[in-house]
Image 1 (cartoon, rainbow, N blue to C red):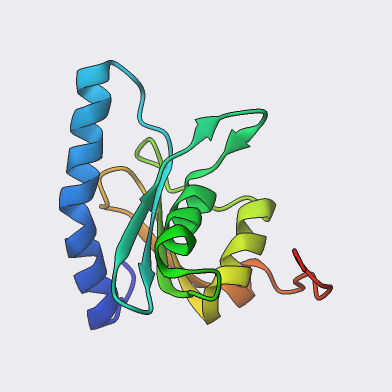
Image 2: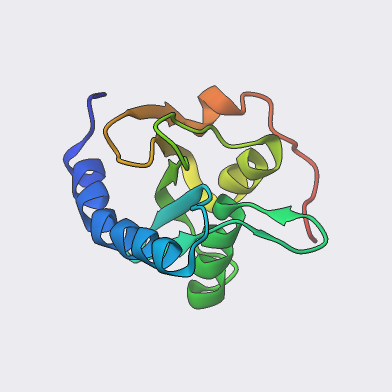
Length: 140
């Protein structure tokens, strides 16, 4: 496993019961778990997001960030995002999600990419995953 800070390790421990609850729900409903995401806001609240299909697929990262913004406001920011794949392979955020992570994360936010059992975790900074972000006005 990668070298995680104390805050990152504590965040993962806080996420584990939420992930277990989500997996139990998926099993009970007979659905495959999609890639889920968890964000740790600057206020130390955890928000969970799962993918769902509307006119297009809404990814777990977008959903988790949206939950944070809904609860804490448009100017809220998160310190860490954990993206959990639906298998034993880690999953990386897509381009749209990288833009959202850059927009709503603290400067150079930590991005943790993990497998479903959290036994494989890779740690990145958003600047590693998205070195040339869009600099124009967004949603103004």
